[in-house]
Length: 79
Image (cartoon, rainbow, N blue to C red):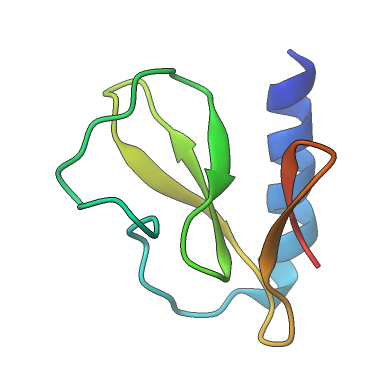
């Protein structure tokens, strides 16, 4: 439950700085399925992705124009 809370917090913090970006995670093809529903990470350099209930990577949040997605303490954050 804490990971869901963290994802929701990241989404809320980054919605004010939404930018357009390619929603396909780096290193993945758009058709690739993810195995762990609720897992998340950095997609392209400026977005956070989450594995949805259908087993597909979807964009959860975009980082601001002067930010990038980075793994901090094992969790994705816009820095």
